[in-house]
Length: 159
Ligand SMILES: [Zn+2]
Image: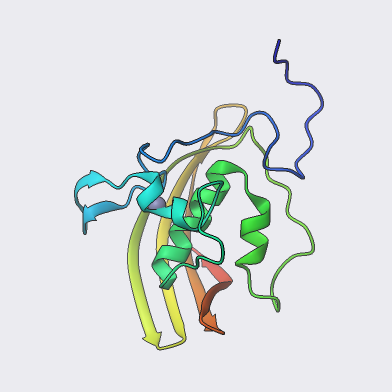
């Protein structure tokens, strides 16, 4: 009998987190063509970078892909991925994710490459907490590319 007991947030293998098959629609909502068509399969989208299907050493090729994969990491409860893709200058020591927070959808409003190693992504992420209260996170995030990998630097709230 699976029973949810004391919850630890340290492992993404804890009960309460969604599991995705490669053919499931990717939580990030990315479509085949920009804004059109079917949502990409998890295994062909964020699953290449985050979760059990990820390629060893696979890295998001641009800031938008990284941002989307980080959203998916929130959905999957993968704090390790969030920390690994956070720039060391701004990365917290630890990150506690709450499985009771349910992520409902992501909308990328703009992907703004500034130069070869800097980019910004504006997005809206919707979620619902354990009490059922819905909220919208509107953020403008900054990303930097170092050693061939993109990292999340910080975000400014609001449109
Ligand atoms: Zn995705």
